[in-house]
Length: 163
Length: 271
Image 1: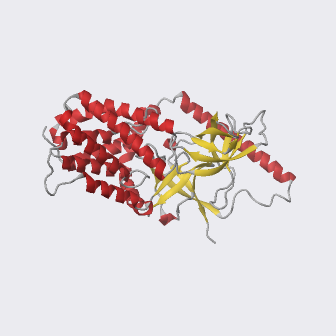
Image 2: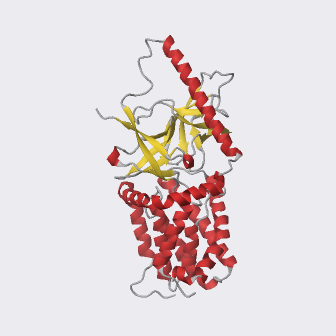
Image 3: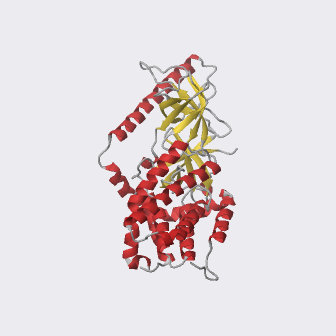
């Protein structure tokens, strides 16, 4: 697996978002759904041929999530862009093929995305209780960490999905 | 890794993101709502499958308890209605004002997308927009329950913020649980605020008042926003005592949006 096509990844992102908001909408653990798009951002940043591809894909995936929320447009695009940029920057010290790495990176990214989006929601809309922020971001991180290795391995192995 | 000339960089994308965030929601939401409308035919089948996976076939104890709470809320409503009618008979001359404002009418709308892609927001999309007279801030009902307010309006669809959304604030009254078939006269005027979670919270509820466990929370009249008195909001399921004269009761809404297919939007008739 050398790289991927951005448009294919975006199409998978659209399917993942629909899945997350429908099939997985009722499968929440401690109020949090597994963040499929963060797993895709992790994949994009770990397996991009060059950083610009990772950044563009992460930003586009974030914008995709922004389309289906009442929050300000660009909020998730910015959060995912920062995540993609950070993961792409850490690539030299990460063994991207290892499932544990994928789980850890996906989980931490989901936790950070959860906390950052909670901060944005509190700033733009109204206060989200701090305890709920921590609990829900934590559960989102755990569920995403469990799911990320499977999703990333699938995308890395099944070439026709993203090439 | 070196960046090639003409390729994407983080800085411009971040700048574009922040520029998008600075745009007014009134500009950015209508195209998003149109896209949600396009998504809806594809969302129905997996949504129903997801509901089945979450235990749609076998009803859990929590679901049965919710149904029981709902039925009990209807009983409460009936009791309150009877008490109100008796009061009207006894004070005939003072009962000229009707409970239901004749200037208010309802517009039926179907629920298109039941969830928000952000886990901190509680919104859903309905298939009625400005073409049907929907305006921002209008109350959205299910039977006699207030479930939310219209947030942003598109031409054919609108996004509704549930009463548990952090953006929603509504005047409320906590009515003490009925004892021995009769409801207590005590009422606690307060404000219901969404938290982004499954529960809302009551603010400015006096610690010694009626908003204890099991109290029913209903709307207080707000003519400016067109909210009539007595619409059901939820039930108090716990009270966290904080320092000072105010308690902080948690309110579980009676209505779970996942089980709602259509809603009514309360529309004021212009003279």
